[in-house]
Amino acid sequence: MLFLSRLIFFLVSFTLFLFCLSCSKKSPSNSELDELLTKLNEIPDIEITEITPQQDYCQREFQIDIIQPLDHNNSGGGTFKQRMYLSHVDEELPMVFFPSG
Image 1 (cartoon, one colour):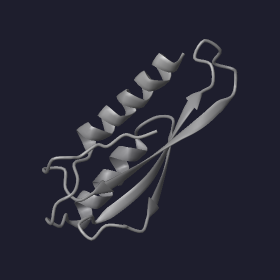
Image 2 (cartoon, helix red, strand yellow):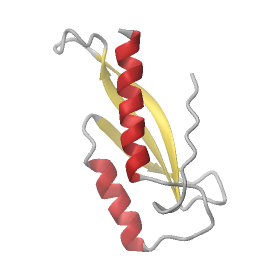
Image 3 (cartoon, helix red, strand yellow):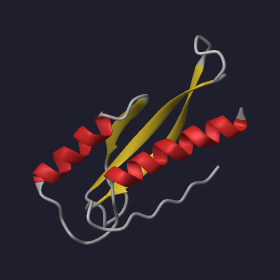
């Protein structure tokens, strides 16, 4: 079960990687910023909250809560939220992913 939780977390993180590249001094346009939020909202089973950027180099930051089942074999069972943060600048730039926990 731990393997499945880690696999789901990796898959969601990889999906975010495909959509979001971050941390550079290039400023995105408003349409790019709106497009990012639209893409993030298309990912199932996550809750996205935009937060005030904590870093000077990032234009936007998001708190992302991934909703996961307690038991992957019992879809009717309870769920829990796994939290991650995304600091975004531009999709054309590399993204640094640092998992912890």
